[in-house]
Amino acid sequence: MPRRLCGLIPYAAVAAAYGSIAAAAYVSRAWWSPLLNALSDLGRPSNGVVAAAVFDSGLYLAGLLMAAGSMFCCHGPARSLGTLVGLLLGLVGVLNESFGHVHYLVSVALFLAMLAYIATVGPRVIGAAGAALLSLTFIAVWALHYAMRVPRGVAVPETVTSLIFAAVYLSYTTRRCRG
Image (tube, rainbow, N blue to C red):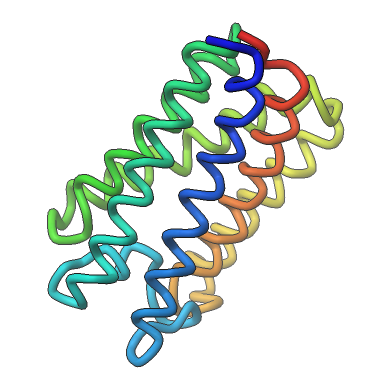
């Protein structure tokens, strides 16, 4: 893949994901709250067809871009784990919340793959201590949510931990993935 595309694809993937989330949240602002809901609630067609179409197609596109960019531009763990995260992100868009337990399992796998990426690829750009700190923060955010239900909705931990992943992903791919 041309070097220029390898530099642009990660940004396009992240923009597609967060752009679709923001657009779907805006369209759903009458009923959706990040403190009470999951991000995936935006992708359930029964909650709103327009928001679901925007959310699900955005995650699918982001996942496709991330998987392709990782596969064709990166090497080593960044290639395999980046491709895995991308494929799982795309599956979250395809197997939306209407698919029940299957969606939940794919979502859990996605966040575990993100954590593996941070722990494995992170030391190459932010050092071992930085990657350990971000990994522990990632785990603590989820532990706090599940142990104490803080906040009640899962959108906040989903957003915080995905932003941690996105920071490491963009930092690595823009510096080290050149095709």
